[in-house]
Image (cartoon, rainbow, N blue to C red):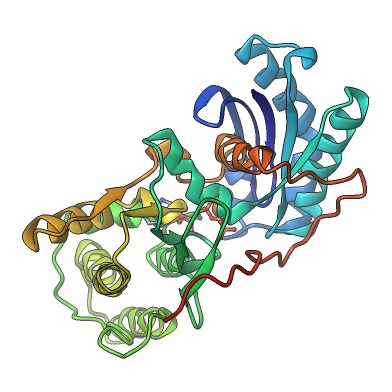
Length: 341
Ligand code: ATP
Ligand code: MG
Ligand code: FE
C-alpha cells in the first residue's frame, strides 16, 4: 500500500511516499527557517506563501525520488490540523487536488498523531503506550490504549517546551529555532543557576515552563544591568537541566502508574540529546521494564513521512475524508474514553 503524504502545518513543506506505513520511499522536506529567522519566529503570511511556492515541486520530487507513478498510489494523506490555518490549507488543497484528479481516497491526519507515529519507523508500536509529545506548540502526555486511540493525561498550562527553548534562545542571541543550539551549548556547561522546576512534585501530570522562562530572562537582564558576564554554556545547561528534570520525572511517574509497554518520545524536542540521555539513564538506573522509543532525529521535526505513518493506521480503519475536507487549526485528538485515572 502506497501513500502520498503532505505536511504543511507550520514552516516545513514536506511530501513523502510511504509503503505500508513503515517504509519511507521518499521524504522531501523544504524548510523555511531562513525566511523566518530574521523575525525571531514563524510569520504566518510568509509561511503560507512559501508553501504555495514549494508544494508542487516537493510533490514532483517525492514521486520521482520514490520512483512511483500516480497509478501506483493507494491513497493521499494530509495534515489538516493543528497548525496555522493558511499553511494547512496549502497542503489540504494540494492533497485534495491529487485525490480528485487520480480518483484516490483522501486520508485526514492529525499532526500530533503524526509526530507519535514517526516512531513506527523504529519498530512496531506496542499498546498500551504512553507518548511524551514535546514540540514547538505542544507538551503533552498522551495515553494510547490501542492504535488510533488518544487520551491526554497531562498538558502544559502555559508554554510548550520547544517554545521555551526558542524564547530563552532569543535572549542568548540564538536565531529561531534555538532548541538544537541550546542543547549543544548545554553539553558544554554546568547546572549552576538552579532554575525552578515547576510542579515537579505536585500531584498532577501537567507541566509549566513560563516560570522557568521568566527566571531565565530575569537572571540574564539582572546580570546585564550590573555589568556581570554570565556563562552562556552554564545558562543553557541550567535551563536544559530544569526542563529535562521536570519532563523525565513526571513522565516516568505516569509510566509506572499506568503500566505501559512502550514510551514514545515525539515532536521536535524529542531530538534533544540531553533528554534522550537522561531518559535512558533513568530506565537503566531504576531497572525499569520500559521500552523507550525515539524517532530518528530527522523525523522528530515536521515531515511528510510521519503523516504517512499515521495515515496508514487510518487506511486500515478506512477513515477517509470527502473533498470538502477543511483545515482545522485547533484540531484536538478525537476523544477516546479508555483512560481512567
Ligand atoms: P507542533 O508540532 O506542536 O505543532 P511545531 O510543528 O512547530 O509545533 P516541531 O517542528 O515538532 O514543532 O518542533 C520544533 C521545535 O523543536 C522548536 O521549538 C525547536 O526549537 C525544538 N527543537 C528542535 N531540536 C531541538 C533540540 N535538540 N532540543 C530542544 N528543542 C529542539
Ligand atoms: Mg517547524
Ligand atoms: Fe510539529
